Length: 92
Image (cartoon, rainbow, N blue to C red; front, side, top):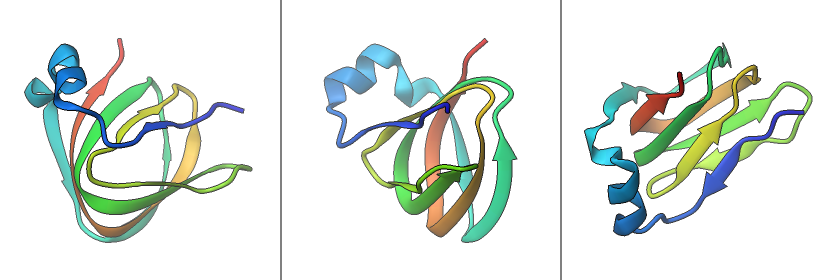
C-alpha cells in the first residue's frame, strides 16, 4: 500500500530549501470527501486539523507545521476537522 509521509514541525531551513513559501496555497472549510492522487503531492500545513484515511489503511492526522507527502495513486478520505490552509506542490 502507498503510504502518507508526515514530517512533524519542519524547521525554516528545510522549508527554505524546498521553496515552500513560493508554492500555491489551498484552503478548505470543515468537510469530508474522497480523493485520489493522480500525481504525488507535497504540502505544508499552515493551519487546520485533518485526518486522512487511505483506502484499507489507518487514519493519519496532520496539522500546522507538518510537511506531508501523498503518493501518486493513493485513494483516501479527507476529514477536515478544522479549516485548512496549506502550501502545496504536485510532482510532474
